Image 1 (cartoon, rainbow, N blue to C red):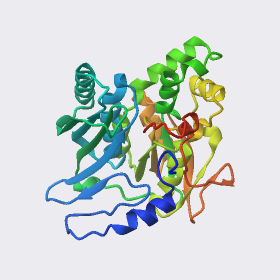
Image 2 (image 1 turned 120 degrees about the horizontal axis):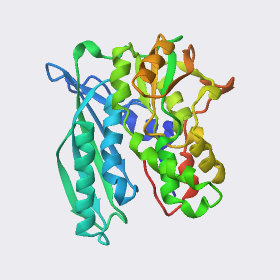
Image 3 (image 1 turned 90 degrees about the horizontal axis):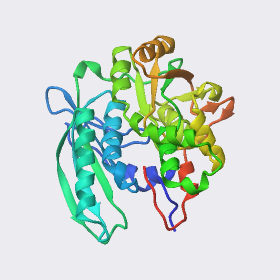
Length: 329
């Protein structure tokens, strides 16, 4: 039986990624670990593409997550999201009202993100037991704004806080296990759903010399840090004492015995840059919390607090679900 969550990187590379080869001159990239966007050269600006499923968000937030998680991948590549193609799969137990609600949520989130819903597919199927979306984002990137890639001695800046998405999921999906957590912390955890977009900080980072970026998703900030190093053919050294952890996140994770540094973290962006302090100041001037949490180093082994940093495995969130249940990201 397969384990919930993403494949381990060695399995993903061996079973999937190594089987694909570029044959078109328009393709500027091949699928690889730690790289979430494909780049195409069709003349003019470059085209960035990425796709993501949302397999078990609540109906209330499915549209919002679909839009922001997809746009975040493009933003982390330094591209400007333009539109989304969205597939919606509904179980037979669903309702027309739920379909309409998801579409309303998609529409509202798209307006906030300044992107268009370009099309897609809607279907009722017995292949799913709850509403599932899969979206492909289309984005543009000026030729003169391509990221050069992270190099040793670049500093690594993190925006906002760890486990932004994970904290909201814990508050929404596990209230019965959080009876010991103060109510005001539960409320503030719910409010984090408004911080899922990283598009604003990506724009600021691009104006201030970002070399490489990676959004924090499944595997948390430590998983994203490892992937950032791997994708740029170097390693990273992280100081976990510098990583911002909110009080509500810390309380919810403690109540559920989870590591917040390895909990799904959509809403936070890792940015490699020469001058981390200057970027942190620029972000905070625009109201976006940020901290310099480490740097890029030579070699293939990444470190956190001086100890080797393992590649990401199953997200902490999956520890809360039975083997027959699924949750996304």
